[in-house]
Image (cartoon, rainbow, N blue to C red; front, side, top):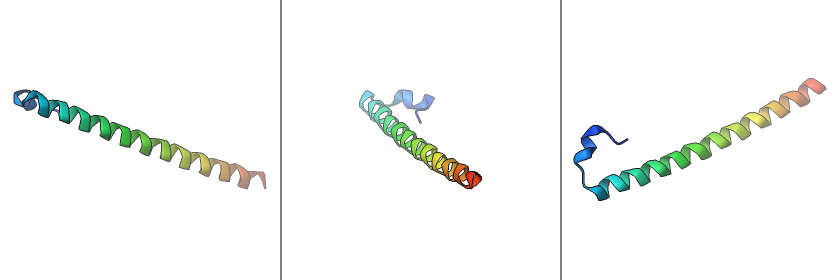
Length: 52
């Protein structure tokens, strides 16, 4: 995470930290989507069990 102290870093290092943060955001978004799919599958399984 970029902190106030990072203001003294060279521009290139700050740009790299921004890119790294963007990659982390993408990984978290992918993880969240996989959790949503898992939840959906459990809900479908539960609905099927309730229908029996």
